[in-house]
Length: 265
Image (cartoon, rainbow, N blue to C red):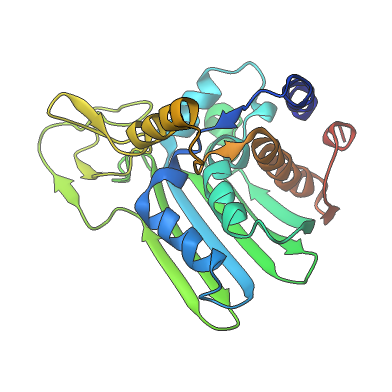
């Protein structure tokens, strides 16, 4: 809940502890490079960002199965936060002031009272826009183990497109592929690399979680600056995902930021 996040954030600020959150996408070279190009002005002033996330419904079914209150589970809060964080990290110089969103629940509602997808637009103080959409209701046979993402960033001087769908390395086999948060034996085709923590090879985990862990150890031991999200940034991402859901529920635009009191509406 947003109120619980606020309580934790206040405690962190009061203690002065260096608390960070390991959004794993930040530790992948493509997103670090994208961040650098935006940060150094290679696109000029960013005017529009779009993100589209597709997810195998196994993740959704697993989350809804483990809750007694499906209303507290949504594609944006649980999974959309990763795409949202990447975009807001690139757009951190801009302040979001309004959100307008809609959700649909035709596929998962009959199974687990779940939400299929959410789409919406964040408007920033300077008029720039971020259009985000996520569906975690794709069929179980969808080859993505978890995440397939596309992002486009348009500026006054350039454009940057990032294909993170993992369609460049495809495995098709008669042997079931169990990778993902809730493996299913019927999966026979896999977009390799689409499991966010990384991949097991030669008995070890390689990928974002490994890099994030090493980066965190360097931060602790050597005082190095790292790409980690601060506690305040992580709270902001939760607030924004909750605002997506609130706008979709009320079917109207919502001023930002929202508070725990708004969340109860």
